[in-house]
Image 1 (cartoon, rainbow, N blue to C red):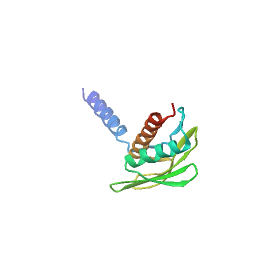
Image 2 (image 1 turned 90 degrees about the vertical axis):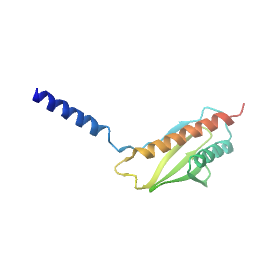
Image 3 (image 1 turned 180 degrees about the vertical axis):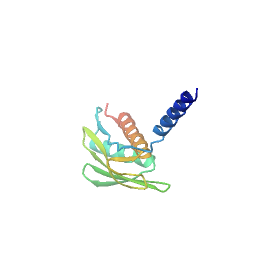
Image 4 (image 1 turned 45 degrees about the horizontal axis):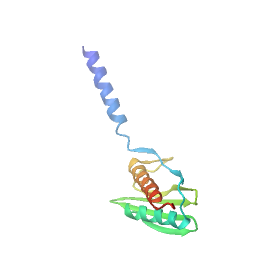
Length: 129
């Protein structure tokens, strides 16, 4: 009975620790645009989706938008490269997000995933009919 209890306690500890991982691979969404949007509509969709989520969005040149999110004591910097056919959200740098060796705090991936979903929704709602 004692060995079974020890085994059960050991398994519970292992599964508990596995669920506590705070870092995961950096998410780099690459999204194909299947709707018919002008480049201005795509730029506007990216900018407004970011601003709505609390990102500071600035134009970085043709086909490039830079974003910065300050969330409490965490900072994330991204670059969104876009064309009329697709866009990619690239990690640039961060502060206090445990970024190391291609891994980052899972909160970053959550923020970027939400941004990607919001951009897709805005593109769908403004697509040329």
